[in-house]
Length: 282
Ligand SMILES: [Zn+2]
Image (cartoon, rainbow, N blue to C red; front, top):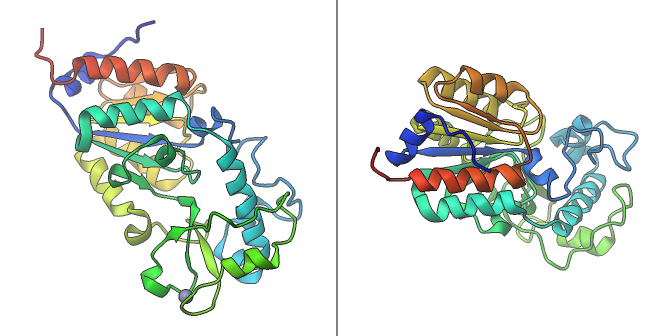
């Protein structure tokens, strides 16, 4: 199978242009991680009393850090059972070839890009990472660090946190709670914690925007799409369902809409894009 590459996209590859790849829940769904906002999402699993928008907040954490951590440890355990898929690996291959000409901006907190081998240097996890925690009071500049490997995950999202786990989730400096290193609904994007400004700078410098498995429901990704259209940059939307980005892709200069599974279409796209990379026009 061959994809129909627009002349504009081929030109970007030949000129070794700057590529921004933006990924969302759709790429992880193909690894078996349910989409956050989908019907089968686990935002509400086992937490019937709360909507996801209530649970994933600083105010909920402040009220009940144990319940918040129980839910996050359960979710983290589910992501650890999943494996990076062919789409994650295709992006590693793209990066291996084009290096710093690529920035990978992800909305996903599952850590699958890191586990696939994407270089953290070029990876902006703008919504955080379930495998990291930081002091809730900001000790050590609030620098994130990995969750202890030996921490036990509760069997369900509503099961209480074990005393041993709770102990491991306290800060060695101040004795207060550590918190999940994720961006909550009642918090703002930040450069220091999530490289949000670096991501925006990349949007203004990109020659191509490749969007994989996201609906543009959150503000920073939606901004990337608008910037692409305004700057005359080709936008490629790869998603089984047409949505916000497919619409922008049709309006962008030389954009492409790839309707299908990322595990099938992304390796194909990367292969064809790399075949043009740095090649003379002909
Ligand atoms: Zn502390």
